[in-house]
Image (tube, rainbow, N blue to C red):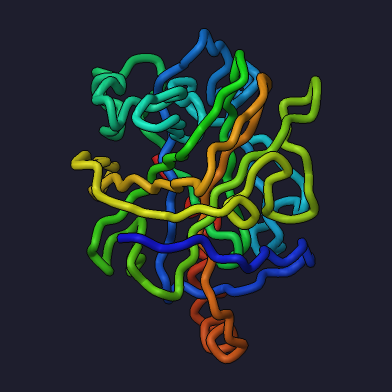
Length: 284
């Protein structure tokens, strides 16, 4: 499927949830298990940590409107990301497209994936549905020109799936976004822009086209199985990232955002959120 990037901007943080509904299911991004360029930090905060989140919805019970560290398994290098310049791969921290991911990485609690306790972790990222996204660390040693970015998400196609529910990547109400933030020097945190838009790169301001397709790989969870999909943003013109530390994220928002839908969803949403709040944001 192909979708041109939406020109609409994210709303600024306003300290409240924009759309609390389970009607569209849940969008979960995939983590990577490769450590390119001699990367030494990993998902475990003891190493510095490679996973961050920000939320604008107080219902989660976490601090809002400021990036937070989240402790993951050491085998996770960040949110899975592939950067390409034409047909050449210039960055890859996941190995999904090349078939070089660690053995067993996409199988929950695989004994063949050492030192983690579990393989891939998936991360809830919906910027105006309970207003929460994850971002993952990556580092570039030299200036890197890119013509496309690839992230990865899970999709089961089963509306009763315990992880993604009725999520449908082809739903015309969904809008995809990709963003890159710079790092706060010495603090390993993305720069706070006052919203979900990256300060280095955003699909909202850099013209391009989104496409998505099944990679042919599946992610096996503790009680469910989903297909791993590739989300590609192809730029209208090349873009160069300078050497440095960055944070990458992709997410889904729902548009339009009718007040009637939000009101109808509140009763169910409150029950769902109270039951799932502790486990919904990330899943092994």
